[in-house]
Image (cartoon, rainbow, N blue to C red; front, side, top):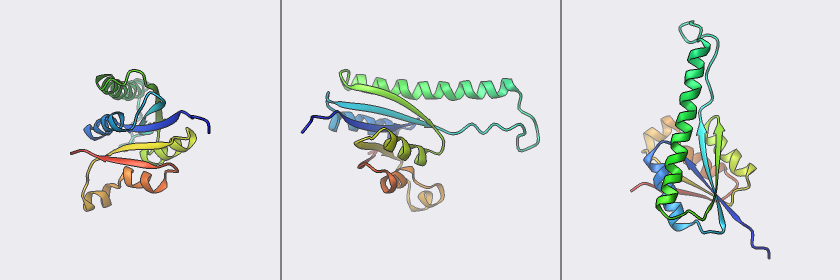
Length: 155
């Protein structure tokens, strides 16, 4: 049997929980023969010609919001890569992927598209009521992703 490079995808965002999940993944799952895919999902641009009060957004405002969104993407990815370097995962083949849309749907579809062998995610540890109101991205992915999902709870 051929020794195939395993793809481990880690969903990262601005939270401590996702960075902890990345650290856990590097410490416990990643080897030099794995490919580590860092996935950040940004919300879709909700720019319409009119806002809720009926004002038209200028192109300058839209450009500023897009720049901020890209700055956030780069900031999260740089933090994730710094976490990898700090844990001596410098020989790992790493790839950045940025998706746009609803996080739970994008994570599952990217895992399928990239044929991830394992999906690693952090958990915010919401209780029953918060999870019922806000929904849980990790619960959704555990049920709908086509690969094994490891949910890492921040201590």
